[in-house]
Length: 75
Image 1 (tube, rainbow, N blue to C red):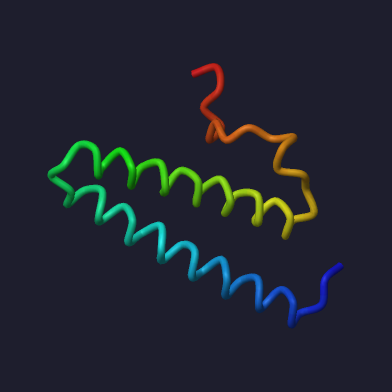
Image 2: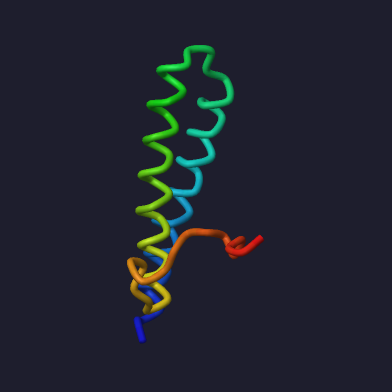
């Protein structure tokens, strides 16, 4: 198990990442240019994938073994 200082540091990094993704979503919603919106969406998607990998690592899992289907499979 990781020590509390490492967990606190990782949580701070995760919080910053969440804020960046939130800001990205606002930029996407405000964008009037389709190409810019597409680029912002791709950047956001990459950041989300990185974020999910980091979360899985914190929980001791292997992110590549899990799908990001939000539990909606079969619906």
